[in-house]
Length: 162
Ligand code: RP5
Image 1 (cartoon, rainbow, N blue to C red):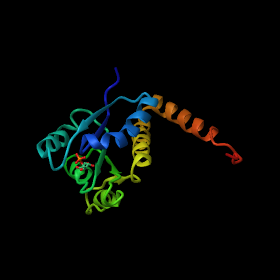
Image 2 (image 1 turned 90 degrees about the vertical axis):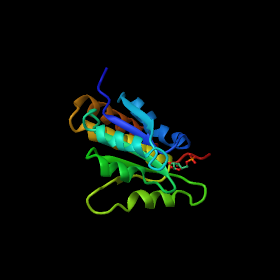
Image 3 (image 1 turned 90 degrees about the horizontal axis):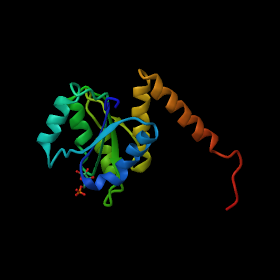
Image 4 (image 1 turned 180 degrees about the horizontal axis):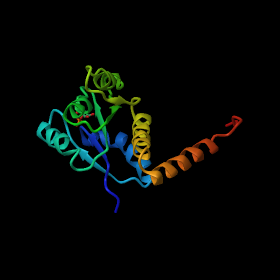
């Protein structure tokens, strides 16, 4: 069994329908990952422990999704040098713009690679994680190249009438 190098974390169970997009694309690429609920506000000790042990546990990239006052990705980035990809979860009240700004506006020194709001952002987070792993893993690189080629090939040249 290959080493788990991708961590998917989220602030709440309610984020999972969004974050599962990242998990699904990692499954498609046969990349092992772990998925955990780690809330910056409700389980701060869990966040600290996760960040503190991420390097030693062999994680190479962390995908962190949260909504509203979405402090999880930034706090995780402050606790570990493992690259953090942030996913702003869409909210009912403010459509996820609150999540986006909370994740995007990091102070100098602690970057978070922020994706688009919602499902597309989560899927791209999974792909970005795969691209990072592909830098040093030729098998992942080959599967990713094939995945990208298949996506391109699936796009028709002409629009179809409904
Ligand atoms: C954030 O609060 C979570 O990331 C979630 O997006 C949001 C709402 O959480 P629940 O009230 O649905 O658990 O911490």
